[in-house]
Image 1 (tube, rainbow, N blue to C red):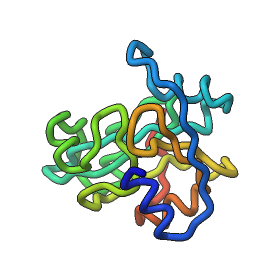
Image 2: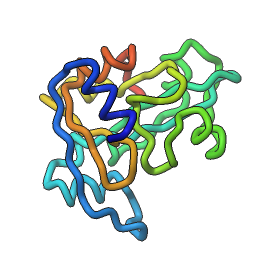
Image 3: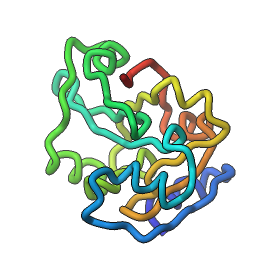
Image 4: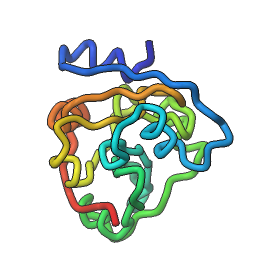
Length: 154
């Protein structure tokens, strides 16, 4: 069990855990997850941590798209946003980069989910380690993370 799975279990939401054998040489962990789980990559989302004006926040975006930092800053009401440093991400979330889950982080951070998630009946996010994804409804993810939806991917 990871903190992400424990958070979903504690919240008593519907979710499914999916494990696969992770290849450390994979060029994109998110695309690898989609391929190995046999799901469209549009339903697999990556978790990114940004520094928005000195405050950390989480962005959840489809694995095939990039985070639009200007749109993320706007969604957070900040002047600008930049990717957070790896050491800061790992210390703040409690997860290793490549396995950061939006759920069960050590410190609750403001979270924004790309609006495309609303088109998915369920989506897949990291379950807290490489090779482990959790599938849940976008509304449940938003509820558990107190997230908002915004157009943050391009």
